[in-house]
Length: 424
Image (cartoon, rainbow, N blue to C red; front, side):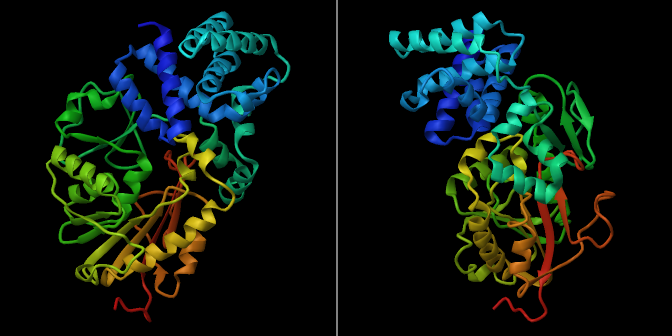
């Protein structure tokens, strides 16, 4: 296939992200599976998708020097963004190729569109004033309020690591207990036992070891959260917001008895399919944790894992499209939900039970401030250390960051019921 196929694929994914609020990773993975592009073109499509998402405000500023984007329809605008990204940042793509391939994409819209795209991108190609290095363009594309919050809560170095990755984050694998370390996979060790980073080309899900159930593709921070639950044989665990079940599988592999719940039935269907692939069994139930806990769950669990809905600011290096969906009040609004979920799920703990609260956000409004808000029913308890120097003895919470733990950003805290509280 030609490189035009890679650009066409990237265009389709970016339109879906803008029009349907699709998540880029899922939309791109499906598109790549359907298209079966060669490896080099998969890489080009991926680079364009994530590059445009990370630098769109900068690219818009560059385009607006030469046209009024307010009257440009979505598909033509996205073609311009795809072309401008190549002109600004992909030195390996000749300018004439970036322009001509964009014109070809525009022909599917109409002759007027191809002429318009040609005229605008030729001006962008000739306009060297105001060009920025890629890293600076990404940084300048982040909303000012978000940059300031991240710098406040994790410091500038970690904020830049979350927002401006030096290279595309690699997939992480969790090798399951008792399974062979899959041959033929190019892997690097990580700080976490049983976890490796995939550094080869292609998709590790295409490897025979994946189909055999030897490993799971799971981001390192997600694996860490499950390990911090420190559950094993004899423990009954509630995975309260289980989603598609990656942490559920970790807990089951550790020998725990797990009940997985989620608000969304389609996620639990995906969870059940994944457990079947892995040869595992978990009880699954649709539960709305903004309402009182089901009677059968009250006081029934040794460990509750609450991986709560959040802003996702810790995953921005992998999911840059999240930035366009957040506003200055998003964390505060979600904090109220997170506190309510903690209150309801805490009623499910047995005496002496532990609650692991995790979010893939690093903003303190969703982290320390939420923990403080439920202090009347839950109090902090020391986390297991996992052998990490970043987690000093007695620490009750931990921020995972690419600069310290080589993972996405998370906040994790261990809590137990306050002496004065009752599950009733």
